[in-house]
Length: 219
Image (cartoon, rainbow, N blue to C red; front, side, top):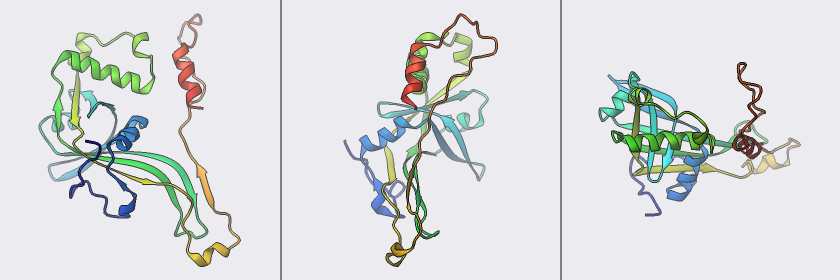
């Protein structure tokens, strides 16, 4: 299925023309993002928590401590809404009212399932590592049994989702185009700086090649 169904929950209502339900487009947003925000309700009080995530196939994984309130609530079957937003640019219009941002966002709905299978759990944690810094997993000590036991990995099946996207220049009122005011787009992206070594790192250990490659790709 190349398109997600537009449901009452997932349908983009405000500026509906910016809505997108294409699976590939939504997955690209998820794959480029780093942090998602998970919203849920506990005892009538809404919460929204930022956390790391990774997509693997048609599933989205998050992980945390066994003592984490959100992880335990979601594990008990609470409904959740997950959002990821990528900012692509500041949109400067001639009027204050029409200033905006170019962005790509995705919103997912569903329930989580705890990952009980040890192999799937390790696979998910490896995917986390590779999502952030490709090549890192093979260069570090992998989790031991105690660390695995202290960690909850939850899996959301991506069954209901939508994206909302804005691109292009400002959209001013017709009469404002004659104003002598600069207008346009300032592109925006997250970049990587030069690595700062741990203060107790052995001087003989060089920056790994995969890390240099990651940094150059984020310039």
